Length: 296
Ligand SMILES: N[C@@H](CCC[C@H](N)C(=O)O)C(=O)O
Image (cartoon, rainbow, N blue to C red; front, side, top):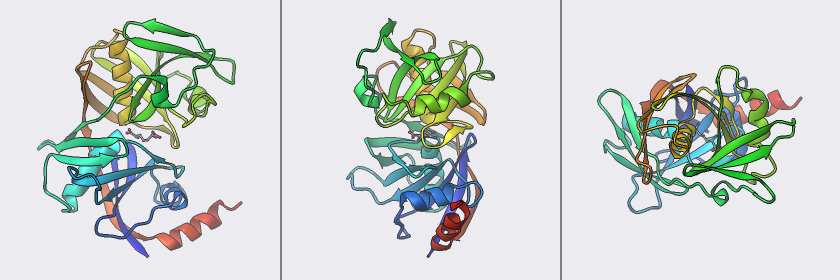
């Protein structure tokens, strides 16, 4: 069975994007892992699937699968690529568009300069929103934010802001992202037993109230060149801690994102969406090759 797809990226966070409206696509965790595999597949941080919505106000449903096969609630860089894909593939010329994600509706608009602005949807700060077990843990108040002091398995203790941008984020402020222990602490935070759904781990360096540098160790994908929801979470956490003011430019390893938040309502994220190439792939043959390649 052949699936046509586009390989895309948003600030270097890369995707395989599939049209599940005109093609019959049954995604499974193993198929997602095979497509995303860097050696035996196409290679991607996430797989994006565009489907017919069930919500009456939505134009499309937008589903996201991490490279490890897990289906997740949201993906900011992917959302921008989703709009570009819908327009390029002539699934719709509507602009702005409304998309249904796991937690509700988001709106997205493509501009003439090839950037896309996404109204990112719900934001929450309570521990339940990121499935965090706070039993016997110390917390501290920093302006409007609650910081959670979390001991890690390697003996480090980190001070985390918890933010759900539909998906879960734990953000810490570091002196220098270049030397931050992303590779060591990232996986320990991501899979910490207190986070029942795992979590995305953000490391933010504040340059001035309107500019940060950010690295994110993503749940189910490892460190990526950029994370859109991670950028929103970092900016929101910085504003709530009194360290940032909207709008904020976020420098990632793969490009820049612009984030605006009024402190109450929706977060707006603007950034690039790029198509690398479009092609088709035989999914059954790919999975067989992936199984053989990863069997040892
Ligand atoms: N790269 C994404 C986030 C993708 C999902 C994330 N890894 C999760 O598991 O929540 C973005 O740009 O937001």
